[in-house]
Length: 60
Image (cartoon, rainbow, N blue to C red):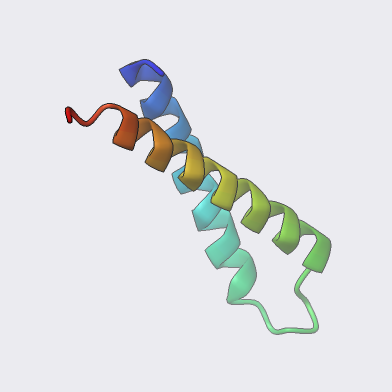
C-alpha cells in the first residue's frame, strides 16, 4: 500500500477511535450498542490494516 493510502487509513482510523471514545463515555443506558460494535469492528480492522502495512514496509 502506498504511503498516501496508509496516511488516509490512519486518519480514518483516528476518527473512528475518537467516535468510539465519545460513545464509550456515555452512561450505559444511552449507549447505542449496534453503533458501538460497528465502530469497534471498523477500528480494529483499520488498525490491523495499518499494522500489516507497516510491517510489510520494514526491511528484513
